[in-house]
Image: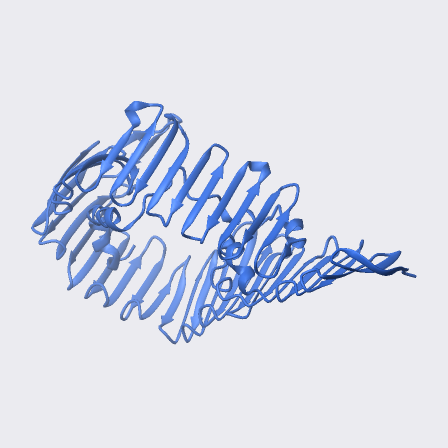
Length: 488
């Protein structure tokens, strides 16, 4: 971390508290056990892939897909439903994202515009619980264990658990008085976030903004659940006329001391035995960073417009917006005439992911390959707003007209809910089974070809033609017309 990030680091608790206050006003409550069912469940390894190949639409008005794994059906733009039997999950959406419901086993969530939410499920220690909220005015958390029950009527009075990045929150006539708990630290706020007094394990501090603040944590050892111990470094933070003058002394793991000082907007300085970083003026100015331990040097003249960096683990050069390049052991990225061209290469032990973008979302291409044998695991192309193409697990999918899909990749719920409204051409080909399904103008014309036979239809199935290895015939409204012919 160089000196330009100093101010934030030294006052992160103050800023987190400010964020908490903003969240109290602007951000909806979070789910009790996470967000909705993983939307990648049906996009990455789709258990309904066979059902998707066999989907049948009546124009853009409705669709239905089913297999042994589950069911999808809906009226595009109005309602969509999906169930997945192996993990006992159900989700439906009405006028997405207005009203949403998700159930995963015994856990469920109902969400109306993120302002009204009801979460039900089993808490790890308190048994079945129900959490409801009418954001930002009312919060309730009730269950079988009375000691864990909480209610809050904002801004008058209340108690909350696991909200706004805190374990516990109690308030009276917010922002007049707010008490928060996070791990071992308890903070008493008055006229939030201007005045507070804080205490915790080996920690004490106060602030009276904008006049000043003081906080100290002594070095100590914390026991872990497995019986081992973790060393927690100490620090001393001070500010005068916040945020203009700030200083912090932090103990490092090796016993050395790092000092950070800032007199905003004139300078920001970070100094340790093996590291030095200075920004003049802060935050956009000339920055010089030297890390002897990592053999790293960086210049910013001014940062972040012009940057030059060299080190064992990082090499970078940037003259924004003309060009930029950054290389590290697991990643390469850069741009030319931003936002004209952007590129990135990310590597891990199993795979390599390459991506290119032209004019942000106008054109995108992403390819992921397996490092052991260079096999392509997944590949995607999109050209906004015309088309999107994906190849994964030997299945190739193409859709023409993709105004949202070309921008919001992997938003399966959005695609399921709205794509049928504007997708004038769809094609899916399974290289393993040999099946190829195509649809034009919402099934005005549809073709389904496989080794077992071929089937095509016109006018949403009004006219159909079926052909197998032994015979073929035509039908109208499901009734055969004419004699069946044997295929030689």
